[in-house]
Image (spheres, rainbow, N blue to C red):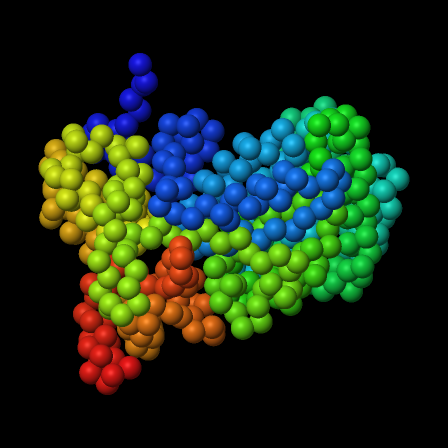
Length: 450
């Protein structure tokens, strides 16, 4: 008999309706397969490309989608599928970098630091001669030495990190530089300018270490094709940082000698510069779950009930909805308000649990759901500039979004969502459609005939 892990109290439902991506045991317990209601070609294509790749060849892959749309969960599933073929290094960019001001040189340092650390945990040591040469260069350009680094790198950072091999001085220096880049605007500028002055040397030394690491890894574990790095949460960078990374320095992101998956903001796909011209492959885009019946002529789209119920099942995998909802319709109202966006679904659900619990209810009722949806609506109203409502009204009518900086900002804050199936189209976030400001803009647009 299968064990029922679902929440049966509002408190447990609140706790389990969090925004933490599913992984490990939770992936087995709570994952709901959306492949019947959402196109899965994006993640399936990435799996195919890496599965058929020849050993020691390298790929740079872009995985795009809205923030909170479920990319991390899909990447965790991909990781399980490929763990027998690749030595996988997964990290979240926002834990290593300042994503509001990230530069490609920051990524270079994070990637080589991660590779060295993970290989060392496997008792694979990078070539001492290569490390020494890299170390000497770093000492020269940064004016750092063992004493200055030891003073600023914590005991924890200087520990063994699960390995019997001591951390090389160079790695401690990388830790210090990355901490300074995250913490000080002045240091950040100096470090970046210093590295960029001799970027060819930085790149050459990193690639020499990556090739050495791959060679030693395959000697010890011949079943691995190579190293696969997954850089998650890079989709959280704002549009100006996205432009720097994926357009201005796209070549540099593709010149590291290992397989890399970068998550990218969906707004990158809406640039007139065309990211497909700067990378060897177009982004693999994970769309929203399409909860609507598409009609290019209709402003207020009807819902697709089968797809709505699939969104509701995401909640039902975690929560015993028979016990905790007064009616199935209340659950479906949350699904409608989500727009097919997984994080928004969980956020509204969590607020509904909190509201019902604080009101002394034993079940979530219609008033609790309505309050939760209104809170989501109000959050958007606080951040949307007034001039954007005219654009949102036009998107609601045309199902299309212009390719410009304003559109990138609108996609970044999920005011507009992308769907695809037989068509690729855009639609306004459903909680915004409830706003009086949006309704007024839509009325003006309809009256003017736009």
